[in-house]
Length: 390
Image (tube, rainbow, N blue to C red; front, side):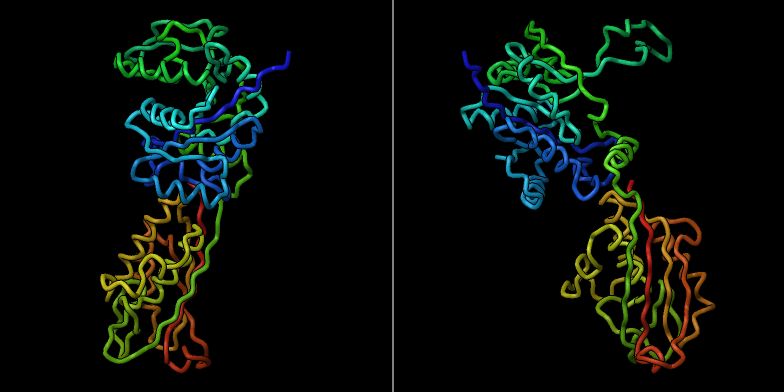
């Protein structure tokens, strides 16, 4: 008798904010190599040929961002993006209800959006094991497990019986939908989806998984995942800016007001040095340039303090999952002589980026009266920034 092929869909949960990561953005949007954690998770899960489609749950305030990310990365197996809930369990329920509208799911895989390396080679075995009561991917514990209270051991488990649950977890669609509805009615909050099946008196099976199927929860997990992918931990950005010297403007360089007959012309305070440093940091994080984030068409940046803008740039870089380590900048001007002010410039720029003393170094040179700088028509600056993934 021919084996009946079960139509299988997946719910990928990405509705959380990841407080333990300590990032300004939800952890699923942090990068691993050229893609976000979420994109990497979806991309790798999509490689299983028997998968019919995917529903993704995302934070309610990030639905459009998630949809754009999925479209940009060409993740064509994603059918819908729906809002997650306060708890992971309610996010899964929202995803299951979205599949209910599709009407033809026999089986469902439930997978964490922050597990970017699902064991594709195990999924055929997982689906077969999931009939009729569900099955999970899990690892046998290699450590002794203790139950503790107030810093004291209460009990030691038999290690041979301890397994560490992972995802994907697989269930007949009708069964897991019923389990979630019953849990909701009873006010039961499980730690994973198999615990909801257990609460119904069922005994899901276990398929041994792989240690590479890590869940990214902390900064250490993120570094491990990037290392596994051989993603570069360091990034370099270059910034350049130039402004014309005119009468009737203050000359501000590196956040220091310098007494001079002319100042720099610009929409903001035209701090050419701070702008070059900002562009180097943004470029190293792949975030474009300062004009993209603080356009000169926006009136609120008229005469803006460029050191304050640099502080905002530092926040943008950190939100992208990068950290500025060092910046080296060169100021090019025939006049005035800026050597007496360099220490204060370095202090201002370093503080704006949250770096220690001399986190930003500044050098100054003339052009021996060549070019627009040499003719005292303007001042320019170059900067190079070294960033690392966090």
